[in-house]
Image 1 (cartoon, rainbow, N blue to C red):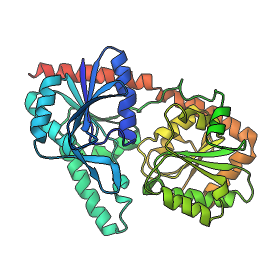
Image 2 (image 1 turned 90 degrees about the vertical axis):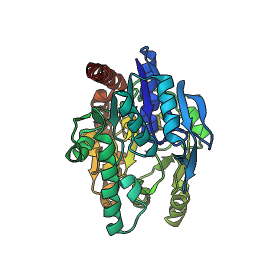
Image 3 (image 1 turned 180 degrees about the vertical axis):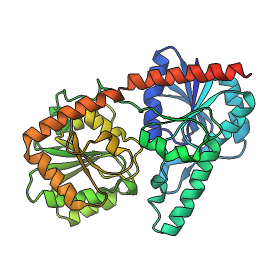
Length: 391
C-alpha cells in the first residue's frame, strides 16, 4: 500500500506532528508499505530528500517570523506542484496532519482524484494564541482557526486524535467520525534501564536528584511558573532542574533563573540528539510539565515509559496520562504552591516515588507504538477499500 503523509510543519521544526510521522512512517515501511511525506522544503526551492529513511518532497517555502524553523509554502504554482506529486506517487491513501495552506491544497486536489483521505488532529488554538495578550483578539482568532479547521477536516473520511480529550474537543464542530488513537511510544527505547554515566559527563550534570523537563521553550509551556516553583522547592530540597529543548523563550528563562538566584541549579541543555534523549529520563527522579496546550505530550509518555513519576498541570489531555496521587500529581494552572508541595513529596519520599514509578510503567503499556501502527494500518485498508467501492 502507498501511504502519503502531508503536513505544513516538518523537520527541522521538531513538534508533535513531526514526531508522530517520523515514528509511524518507518514502522509502516518496515511492514512493507511504501511511504512518503509532502511538507514545506527548507528553502525557496523544491527538494527531494530522505529524512528518517522516508522520502520527503519539499514544497518551496518561506520562513515564519519569530519561528525560523517553521515555514509556509509559497502559493504560486502550489496546486500544479501538488497535482504532479500526487500523480507521480499515486498514493492509495493520504493522511493529513493539519488544516493549513499546503494541506488544504492537497485535499482540494485529491478530492477530484477520488483518493481517500484521513486526518489526524494535533492542533490546539493555545499553541498560537499564547502569543496574544488580548482576550478579545484571542477569541476572534480562535473562532477563525476552528472554522478553517472544520472546513478542511469535514472533507476527509475519518479523523483521529491522540487522546479522548482531543476527540471531545473537535467532535462538536465536525460532521464525521472522530476516534482517539495514541501517537504511541517505543517502549524498548524508553525504559528505566541503561548506563547513565556518560550522559552526566557529556552535559556536566552533577550526581544529584534531577527534576526534568523536555520540550519546546515556548510561551504556552509556562516554564516561568515551573522556575518559580523550583526556586521555592530548593529551599528545602536538594536537586537540579534540567531543561532539555529549545525555543523562543530560552533567553528569557535563563534570565529568570538568574533573577531567582537558582542559575547554578538549573541546567539548559538546548537541543539534544535523539540518541541522548532517553538517558535524560534515566538519570531523573521526576518529570514536570506545566503546558496548558497538550493533546497528548510525547515527552510525558517518554517519562512514564522510563518509570518516572510526573507532576503535570490539570489541563488538556495530561489528566488522561497522569492519575493524581497514583503515578504523579496534578496541579491547577498557575498554582506555584501546589507545584512546590508535589516536588517536596516526590523528592523526599523514596517509597512514594517507587510506587508512582511502578504505576507509570503500568499505564504506559496501552501507548505501545506497535499497537498504534496496527490500528492505523487497519484504518488505511478499510478506508481505501471503502473509497474503491464508490469509484
